[in-house]
Length: 343
Image 1: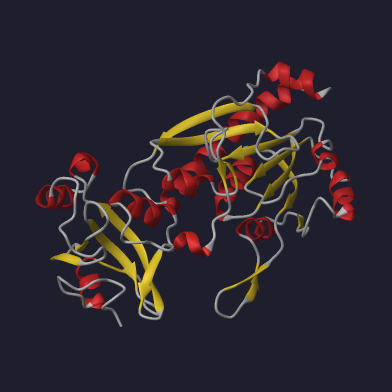
Image 2: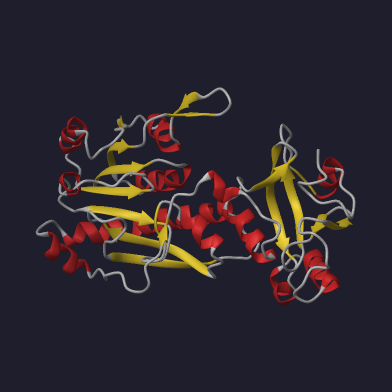
């Protein structure tokens, strides 16, 4: 099949590669424009654009495809049979959706209609979902509202962060797209309603939730929250969650909620600590207080509920550290309060 691929972040690269390896002809790639990143604020191409250029594919980077009529016309001349969209980052207008005779299909990283929108992986972790998955959806003008052709589910381990979950979902997205495209081709072109009926798609059903774009304020961890809420923020916003550290921020990269009822989901050390601190309540100290230094593991910190084991963090201007190195770098002792007695 002749495919026009739409994608931007690293998450979408696995799908681009899988479609190429499956023998499909990639007639073009559409990605977000280069953005300024890093301390030097230099222009950096998206992960998908970099991969596409490495493969020698034509790349299009419209600032707003809805308004860029010239780009729309250029894409129409490519003669794609189908458009495949994975985390592109813009809503496609009706004129673009109508171009390919076999339709536009989206690989979305959630179990629709839960977590429609920009950050489904992060929100599934922030809200403590037990499972997530991938859906291959027929695109329409609404935001992630189309009917679903294929879907696969994945459990979410308690100690998995957004990057790790994203890698699993990216691979699953790639696999499902390769599986879906022969079905889409076999159904053939024609009126959209008839084509979708031949494919046997199902409309989305159930409670709708929206995965809004996350802000810098969302990344701030409050130690007076519950242990689970803190842990979900650290893992769900990895590697951006942070707490105050003097006039700067300490990045929080890995935690364990020391909740005794979750012992079977914790590491062996975490399970022992959960039993030691026991129950559902932290001792009567200020949230963020260091309760214990666990040699080779990290720091036990008070929260608004059960304690939290801080396993990995990153000081300003330093590399990430964990275990004993983290204990030494932070230089805290029991009784001190993180973010208060720090520099």
